[in-house]
Structure formats: structure tokens, C-alpha cells
Length: 400
Image 1 (cartoon, rainbow, N blue to C red):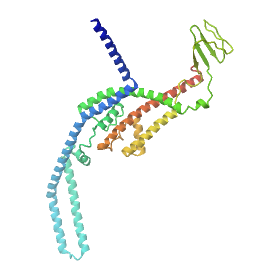
Image 2 (image 1 turned 120 degrees about the horizontal axis):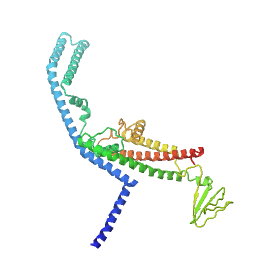
Image 3 (image 1 turned 180 degrees about the vertical axis):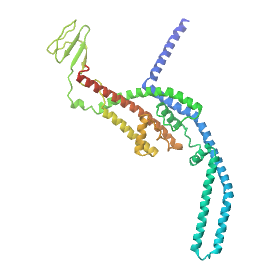
Image 4 (image 1 turned 90 degrees about the vertical axis):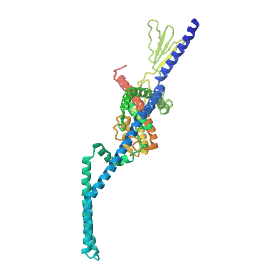
């Protein structure tokens, strides 16, 4: 029994360690990114399963209604035409025959003039009758059928290949939900779809904010290091090195301090010497650079701003090629999207049909990476503003 317990304890410890490692990875930046990507893909599959069958059903129903309405209108018009235009047509034919008998057919110009006048009168009466027929039909047609009739050309082109709720479309919808962009071009129509959207947003929005905050912070660290490595590396050669303002070292029983002013004090076992000499024995020496600049190297605001502008311009070129928009329209769309305003007047995929809808995925990645880039730039701007404020505070004597 004791041996069994001894075997169980290490297994429990291993399980606990594995769980801790899994949770640590899950809440790390990489883990959050993987979780967000998986959550978005899961949302795409779920919304396709919930909304696509209903969309297909509604398209078939609308097309059938339109077909029935068209056939009914055509039949009614035939009846109306025979009952109202038959007499007018017969009267016009008789007038033409009478005119032909009365006038000499050798007078061609005179005959054509009178014949044209009679035919024009017949055409006007026909159009007047057709307008009256349309007005009578609208009075007796239900409202849904009127809406279908006004969209006849668009509905006539509908087929099951031009669905909105495809996986790429649902994936873009998932991204717009969890990023709070919400274009409004595609919405769930089924009760279960709306319920799932509520739950999906309640979980996805905090997850997205947490992921973007972590990702933006780490991206800002990497970019700051890269910026000072590439752009400011020459300063090590061109700029003179600054002397340390203070050097501190500690030993087991004493603390020694030397400054450029070389002050000497001896208090409670603390010893220092004048004349600039420093006595230190086997101690970890820490050099502190006390200048007006911040300890953390920052990136200028202009650089962060130019990063955002460059990304917006690049997106404008991308969507101009994909959607056929002008550069002004594409730039406007990118700005409205990356700021999560999302008016919905311009929506990616409006001109994408059939197999081209796979480009939705590229649009979704552009949006997600753009939001991460915005978070990174905000972190860089925040660090720069804080550093400038501290520097100003030191100069004014507000902070030490």
C-alpha cells in the first residue's frame, strides 16, 4: 500500500507540473496567439454550419417566389393586353387601310407621314395602358413580392455558388465580431446564430484585447531593439562615451561609493576616501549612468506614426488591387477598419464571388496583424511620451 502511494505521488506531481506548464504556455504571448487563431477558425466553422443552410433555403424560396410572380404578371398582362389593346390595334389597322385607299400610294411622303402619326398614337396608347396595368398590379401585390420585384435583376443572378456564409466569409465575420469592427454587411439570421454570436463575442473580445496587448508589448520590445540596432548603431562610434556618474560596490560588511566629486564620509561601517580613490574587494560593481535621458531607449513618435501610415498605404494598394477601389477609398477603408470604427460603407469581398472568396482570409490576416501593429505603435508612443515627461520633470525639478 505504501509502495502504491509512493508511485502515485510522483505521477500527481508530474500531472501538476504539466498542467502548470500548459497554463503558462496558454497565457504566454505565443499561446494566446494560437488560442486566438484557433478560436477564430472555430467561429468560422460554427457560423457556416448555423447560417449556410438557412441562407440556401431563403435563396431558393426567394427565387421561387420571383419566378411565380414573373409568370403571374406575364399571364395577367396577356389577358390585359387582349382585352384592352385588341380594339385599339384593330382600329389602327382599319385606319391604315382606309388611308391607303383614299390616298394615291404614289404619294409616298404623304402616306408615310399619316401612317407614322397613326402608329405613334397607337404606341402612346399602348404605353399608357401598360403604366395603368403596372399601377393596378402594385395595388394588388403583397409587400414582400414588391421587394422581390424591385430586386429582380439581382435575384435572377442568385445561385448557390454566390453564398455569403461561406467559410472565408464566416471567418471574416468572426474577426469583425471579436475585434469590435462590425461592418454589418453580414449578420446572423437564425435564432441559434444570434445566441452563439452573443456568447462568441463575450469570450472573444476579452481574449482579443488580452492577446493584442501582450503581442503589442513584445512587438514593441523587438522593434525598439531592432531600431536602435540598425538606425542608432553608428552612435557608438560617432558619439563620445559618457563617464559614469556613480559607481557602487558592495562587500560582505561594507559598502563603498565613489563619485566624480569624490566625497568622503564614514558612517556605521561605511567607508569612502577622498581624492578620487576607490577601495573595493571582490564586490559586484554596478555602474549607473545618470544623465537626462531615460534608462529605456525609446523610439521617436515620428517613426511610430510613419509605421502606421505605411501600413495603411500598403493596405490601400492591396485592397485597390483586390476590390477595384480607388486609392482614396482603400485608404479610407483601412483607416476606418484599423481604428475599429467600421462604418460598413466599404466592405472587403463585395466584388469577390465564387472561388475568389478565399481572398477573404488575406483580408482577415491584414486586419488582425494591423491591430497588433497599432497596439505596438501605441506602446512605443506611450514609452516615448513618458520618457519625455520624466525628462521635463527633472529639468523643472519636479521629480528627482
